Amino acid sequence: ELTHSVSAGLDYAAVGPEHAYLQNMGRVEYTYATDDDALAAFKELAWCEGIIPALESSHAMAYVSKIAGSLPKDSLIIANLSGRGDKDVEQASKYLL
Image (cartoon, rainbow, N blue to C red; front, side, top):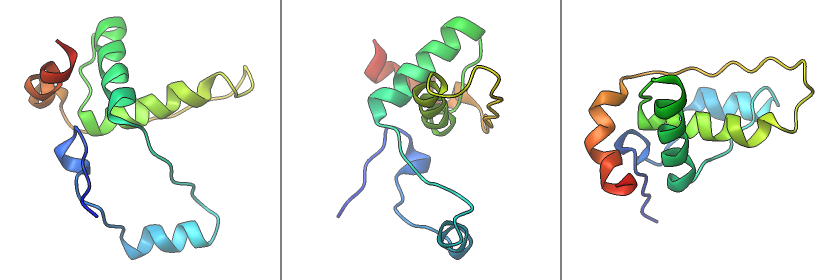
């Protein structure tokens, strides 16, 4: 089955053996964010913080937003923003404007 993501970097459905091993050991949990969720996170981070995240990172930020309210108030959330979002502005504008 073909995959699709607003982010070209996430358009490849594959997993490395390290990730499969870590999941089998119960050390990691994998989930997803929809394109709409990622684009909303892209827009929110750019608007509220002045940070233009890469679309790949926007997927992570969308998940952080999703779970943040269910965590204890003293929880610490660490999310990595990799890449440069300026390369994704044209792609994002197709969906956001």
